[in-house]
Amino acid sequence: MANMISNKTAMPEQAPDVRRRNFDEVATGYTEEMAIQEAARCLNCKNRPCVSGCPVNIAIPDFIAHMAKGEFEEAYSVITKTSSLPAVCGRVCPQETQCEAKCVRGIKGESVGIGRLERFAADYHLKNDTANITKPESNGHKVAVIGSGPSGLTCAGSLAKLGYSVTVFEAFHTAGGVLMYGIPEFRLPKAIVQKEIEGLKKLGVEIKTNMVMGKVMSVDELFDDGYEAVFIGTGAGLPNFMGMEGEGLNGVYSANEFLTRINLMKAYKDEYDTPIIHPKNVAVVGGGNVAMDASRSALRLGAENVYLVYRRSEEEMPARNEEIHHAKEEGVEFRLLTNPVRVIGDENGKVIGLECVEMELGEPDASGRRSPVAKEDSNFVLDVDAVIIAIGNAPNPLVRSTTKGLEANKKGCIIADENTMATTKEGVYAGGDAVTGAATVIKAMGAGRKAAESIDEYIRNKNN
Image (cartoon, rainbow, N blue to C red):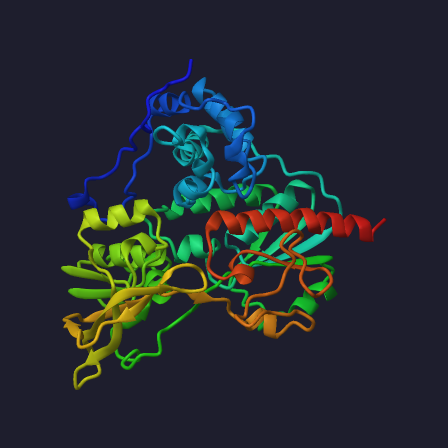
């Protein structure tokens, strides 16, 4: 019998005054009883609208039906038929705008907590499953994947299940891409990412780190080495800046660098000697999830005051509601309708302030959002010793610029067919942020899955 309670089963989490000073995961996860209770809220609709909202088309009602019966391994099995990284997706995917947005229960109350249930199923499996993963029989074909972020790992895992010999080439010393360097430990524990990657290795995926493709090896050389197709999932790791005065001062970071030093280089751990400023007063510029991550990380490094500077209103923030809520709970001060115009430094080149101007919303722009306009004579200064710029990233041009026949658009994103992920170079496919610019983990995974299907079809047709 369905559980007709209108609200989701609450997710246990650390208290704000405790978690704002540690990097432990904020949400502690459902118990078995909570998972069963929440799963019972699913109506198992015949038309399955939630599935259409999932970029990797997980059979959501099927896995939830198993959850409601306490069949957690069976639920996990359903999820992994189409998703390679369920423990990751259950934590960081914006379910509220995807699968949960289409949930019928959301019409008169809150949608079913699909993401929370996916997380529980994945965590249960990682903790309790002892079954050995069987490496599929080889089909004799080789595929190269450049980048070990969500799109690359998904493509690699999907192809490995089909019997392909897959090698992933990663520029950093640790696999995982943005999952490792971008998303903080308190939102996505790195041990979980590595467990997911270990599962892919057991399927036969080989991962080579410290491989800066485009320098140590080109795409054309991969074909010369016997790879029959190449997938490019290099993400969007080139940070954007505003071009304002003072951005070169000591104490100005891109959010990309700031988070990489914390997450990948473990700056928050005393035993790691990672160079990073531990500021007392910080301004973070931006309104997306990365801005929230940088703000909350700065608090955890010991900052006394963290100001989130965003030129529009809260209603227009692209960040997830959950991340905004958590940031506020933890003490981040939101300075909305505010735009920075100059970073102020002292005689030694160190940041001592951020000059800002107040904004007001004018007429809608081409996207329908109301354009912010500066108010006259409204300039003021925030006293800060660090400024973090979190206004987006662009794809790194290295692989693209060293590959003949691989075309990109004006923003530097690789051009790929949205249905097949095929690029303008035969045998080369691309997906994720390298194609779309900065987007979500699950969309990148969806692109990786599409590319794997296309690569399989391409190689089979080529060899028939």
